[in-house]
Length: 313
Image: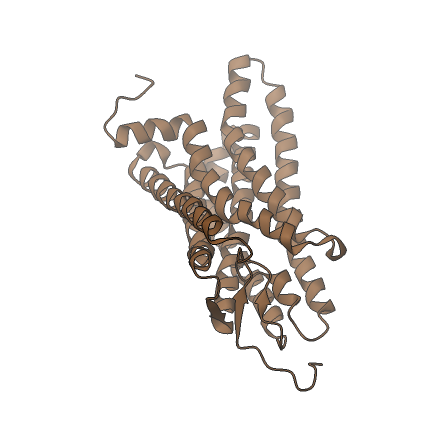
């Protein structure tokens, strides 16, 4: 039960980077704004190129464009307010806006997890069952996988937001983070949060351990299939189609797992905040960078789009 004579909280303040001096905050603002603009422009370029180039109208690039769109909304939910907080650390956020931010952050973050899983399944079918690839990964299957990912994101976000904002908040109003996240908010609740902690852990397992397990199994089978390919060129080409996806998967799931699967007793909000910078600011930029620099087809399409001669010609 809430304490007697306590004040009901209607808005929060982010601790964010308020302990940093003005010059350090300004430096971080410039760095994060640059990364944010690069992320937005990179994802817009990828979606546009995939849309315009018919050679990229394949399941793999369909999922890549969906991931780029999701990453764009994901960063929009977090980074603009974080940038505003760097310039004005005393800027408050009302409880409704906080709930809205958490909802969109979780929706698109979880959507990203399952889109990466769908991309792993796509690579599994392409390498392990190439003769039936066009049948299995048809347009309907791709739309179902993409909409299913978003549906899971929406449902899990509703569960989490309802769980967190069903709690009373009194007296404590400073969120030890730079955005509204589940664990920092639970620490501000003035009632027992054991059930909410369990809900958070179960959701984290469902959206991190389950997709990671599926991706891991896919790649075990993929690698065992690639090893059996007789020609070195064939093995190299097969590995190349998976390298970009695997790079993004390792960093994405790695950072998120450290935050959300770590026992509460070992949780350090300061350390979590630093890791959060990685997966809210840096990881979204990896998608366009990794796929544009490592993917020959995307590079060729980009060169063609800006009027340069293709490298392969």
